[in-house]
Length: 402
Ligand SMILES: Cc1cc2nc3c(=O)[nH]c(=O)nc-3n(C[C@H](O)[C@H](O)[C@H](O)COP(=O)(O)OP(=O)(O)OC[C@H]3O[C@@H](n4cnc5c(N)ncnc54)[C@H](O)[C@@H]3O)c2cc1C
Image 1 (cartoon, rainbow, N blue to C red):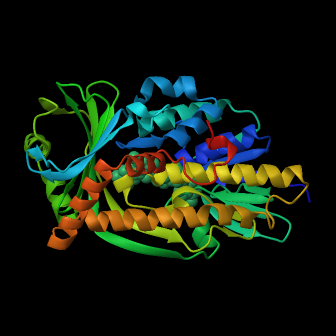
Image 2: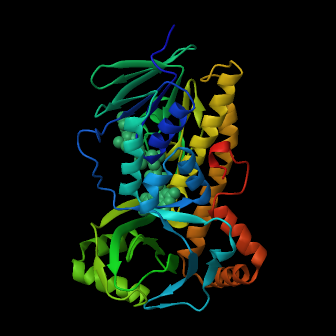
Image 3: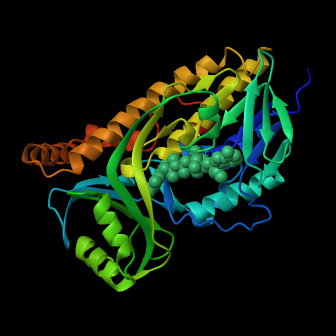
């Protein structure tokens, strides 16, 4: 039977959009579906978050031809400070990653609204790619030869392979009966953007308070994206504050090193959890991005993990096609082997970091101070952690290479 497409992707978040670009550019006839019609409902997104794109994710964006469009929105990370937070001051035991000795930046920060805008523009112009927007997926079935999806409008589409990029509550993952191992943290994160009178100098900061990490991510201009993770009750209270009281609480937490602060965007809160799919594939289906794994934002790695899935899957599918193999067949196991172990390790690492740093138990406090001091004083450890954050360790597929 002749299928409508080579590959159908459900979900046009940053992961699905990147997959659609990578696979259509690799020559696969691709369809991209999303419940939201960004083409006709306008480009604006309500997502106030910013993402840290690791060096390898930046390589991928370059290889997808997005360098010029992204460049005006990328704030390069020039330095990273990690330390224990104390109201109004940063602890003397602060770990400092000076990136000046690296040939390429460790990463850059971009507002999600900008990233999505650039990716959406690119998919609208891409060859080999059809968009089905504003139409949620309502059914998924497979035979040994092909898979079929049905949109709520009744449209039926077939392909040898379906990719689930439909986020943490993935419809496709549930339809395929793939279970998840999940841990709900008693934490949520308040996210907003602040403007300030003093420059941030490209310094990203992660301060640890008893309820969770408080991240300051520098943006283009005198602006910073804030990710304040805390116990759910504290986040609820922070969301209930008026703007003046909220700003005073921010000033109390990170002092006056950025000068006077003003709010520069909406405040939204996100529940935090760890969620790992028990399998990344089933018959004619592959999971990528948050559909496969959700991690604590403590290390800013969630989207980077999804982009690594995209790069690995594109490589596996291109090799399968080059050797005449069925792209929705046994080769999917290679993708699972490549990505699932890495993602699970990172999931465990973020879980442990969150436990270690969102805690006032005395032995753990000593342990993290010792750890910060040891890494701060050892250049090998510094280089290792910088390479890990830049996504440079492990077996890199071509799309992630410089
Ligand atoms: C507070 C916070 C801060 C973060 N900071 C960082 C960071 O600094 N760096 C980083 O790398 N990561 C970060 N992350 C993680 C990152 O935001 C996510 O990993 C990433 O957004 C996941 O993208 P995705 O495309 O896989 O899923 P999503 O963005 O959830 O996209 C899913 C898409 O699928 C569509 N969809 C869903 N169901 C259907 C259906 N049935 N039919 C059709 N369409 C459907 C949705 O409309 C949506 O467009 C952070 C997360 C949080 C919560």
